[in-house]
Image (cartoon, rainbow, N blue to C red; front, side, top):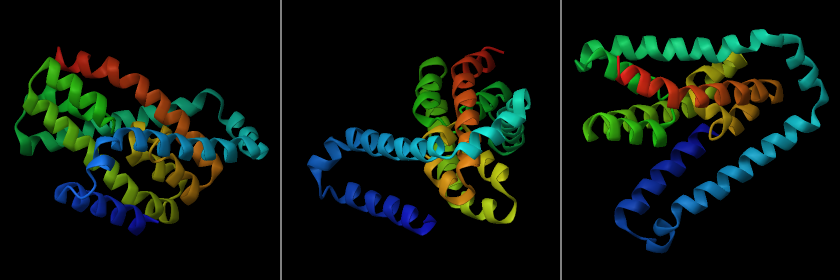
Length: 198
């Protein structure tokens, strides 16, 4: 599955660079949105069909919030540590990390609030996070378990990486991933401006 996804990305880059399918290029956002919605819908069907998942999740109770909070803290700590090599203002590096993989929002926000350069850094950092998550999810699910497979996804665990979590770690982890991704997605528009203005 990982090789198929990586192969698809590489093939898309090649076709895009060569301009072989201009009509496809013009409507790629629409096609991506439709495909993503179909994937998330099928994962939702799987989660809704599996009654045991909901019973297991209800046992977590309010403790379920620790998963996205841990991922958020880990992301910010990672951004802080990486900044020793980038030499950005610390609050800007933290704002990039607070994108939690949501490149389309954090990149635009930081471009508007700070500069096009920081917006580009945020866009690339969060795209690479998502690509790395796609590669790591099956490995982490196999070696360390489902929770570890959710962590690198960040906010994308509620949409683009959700089908891969479901396939690699099961429906219970997909539901946890969806909840975690939803919480992280709500944090992005609050944390990014807050950190920029520190």
